[in-house]
Image (cartoon, rainbow, N blue to C red; front, side, top):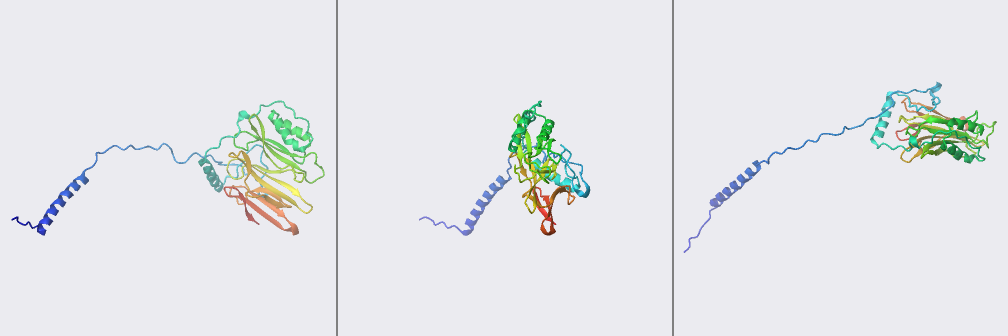
Length: 325
């Protein structure tokens, strides 16, 4: 007869304890084991955060009496007054520019035509053909001094207005663009208070000259008035500020524009987010708040002697109507 084996609780506990201690010891041995140390390479920095930024450190104020900016010297790109606030704003704008990929030049010096003794053709019979005639003359290497003299002979430049300015880089590629403002000689009247005209900007491209910008040719619009060719907002590049006047029987309207070259689109674009308009008034360029950034002051004299003064200021992106007095 087989003897019945009885497991007491104590015996079961003892056996379990032994097994647990054995497993625990093996776990402790495994945790204590460390892999063989290996050398981890330390990578050195190959670049320094930030970049090199060029800014205007000082510049002429070009102030006249009353705080209005004087005419820009021909060919000189003037920055606004270099106050501490202006330098801060300029540095901020320049830093944003430095962070963007540098744009490739749109025109190259070797793409400009070689100078020649080209003489302008006879005056076109239609003012609408003047831009083409001027561009053809420049593309053939004709000198701008002769062009200005010929435009005077054509009656397109008079003692009252009109210019040929050929020593200002507007596109930032180191090549001077040519600004031409001319009257329509077929509609010109010596006794008229204002006469129709057109603003043209040419740049050399692919061995010739291309018309980069033009205002509308309209008999109801006066010759555009240039207020400034130079830096307005501290971005160290030239803007062009002008206005065009048109009149009715009861009032005259001046519409101002601030244009700058956009290297991405290859065109001139407006910096003002809306037309700068005055009624029976005038535009002027001033540093109204003395922060080193130039504002446009537009004075209107509407009916009943009501005088309105609008201040257009730079926001960092465009010019907006910031204050109405």
